[in-house]
Amino acid sequence: MHRLSKYALSFILPVLILLLWFWVSEAGFFPPLLLPGPDQVARRAVELLCTGELARHAASSMARVAAGFLISSLCALALAFWLCRSPLLERTLDPLLEALRVVPPLSLIPLLILWLGIDEAPKLAIVVLASFFPIYLSSLSSLKRVLAHYRELAQVLGLSQSEVNRHILFPGSLPEVLTGLRLGFGYAWRALVGSELIAAASGLGYLIEDASALARTDVVMVGILSIALLGTGCDALFRRSAERILMRRPKREPLELPSEASASFLGVPDLPGISIRGLAVRYPNGREPLTNFSLEVPPGRLTAILGRSGCGKTTLLKAVAGLQPKAAGEISFTGKKRPSIGMVFQEPNLLPWKTVRENVELALLRETETRRRAKTAEVLQLVGLLDREGDYPDALSGGQKQRVGFARALAREPEVLLMDEPFGALDALTREELQTESLRILARARMTVLMITHDVREAVRMADEVLILEAGRAAERYPLAMSRPRHLRDAGVVEAEEAILARLLAR
Image (cartoon, rainbow, N blue to C red; front, side, top):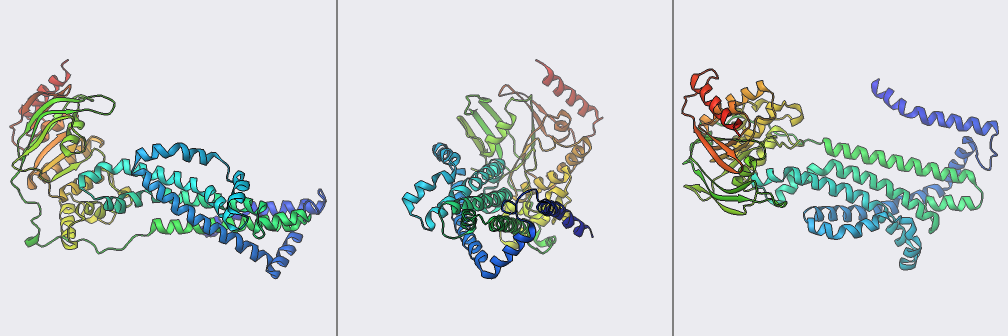
């Protein structure tokens, strides 16, 4: 019933316009030569359909717009993908493309006729030029946005270019690309009919122009209504196809926990430490948040870094992860040349088009199917989300999303775990719950942890050592030898918290 009422509402306005048209024509406000009645136009449409003339012209227009739109789509999508990977080339081509974009395609008809003749080529060129830029601009914007948002995630997970394209770039930009294609088709349809008004021997535009020259207003209106109906029908078909593409979800077998014999993925490796000597990081604007920075992070311990905003905490973490290039200095790992590194971001950075399970599996693309399923099941069980493996991120709470990000980092069996304010965006209760959960997980899956935080209480509760970062240098260190679990009212915890807070507030 609801569906019928929804469709009925969409027909109310067209019916009212038709009734108004009928009333105006019957009342004689305009002569029939200028405004024929709906009944006269309907009779003419039936006549043109019976003779096949209307179908012939409609088929001619549809063939042209389909061919031109296909050429335009392929060229626009290919160029957008190419330029999103090459900012320098985009800056080089942008002035030329912008100049072409602002030139009305129909103004090029005389030139195209001189160059290409009066056959089909000029009409296809008009369709291509008219539909190219809506597709190109929406696709390029979407691809750049997705690439910028998930670039660091792809680097941390070590994804190849083909894996980035398949799992992140293409599905992430698909909704906006489809919108651009839909807009491009509308522009193509309008430009084609306009070009047929000027240089054609067939098509709906030609039918309208020919009828206008003979003062056959009823035929003109048949042509206009045919354009509207065909355009609306094609747009509805396009929109429906896009919805089906976006809603298509592959069915997968539910995950099961591996047997005890094969479940030892989260073992205790020979853990590396982190050694940083003379590190300097310089941004393109010339700012240097870190200059001649040195730090030793002992293996198997959780080191928390505190400091005021802008002191270089996140820059340090990104440099260790290899996401931020060094201007000088050295970052090495004791015992290993380059251990496996996992990272938990401040925002979970989950892919909204993938389920919980698929987001975790993104870290395991090069594993066998059996091992990938087993690892994913184990880490989801570890963070308490195995029963939500088929859900999408928009169905999860903020804390659950952060757990999925934690599970994805653990799935790679990292020897070094980097955490960038992992609980900073959560409410106090959820933050405390996740701190407890993280300590439980890190007690089982031991690793060297470097954590950035603004919360002194969080640092004291979780860390083995707290480092105060100040003006790009390690100002002071606070070893925390209290046993766990640490209660906030314990004398040692209160004393450490007050000392660290006093140091941070000191000028």
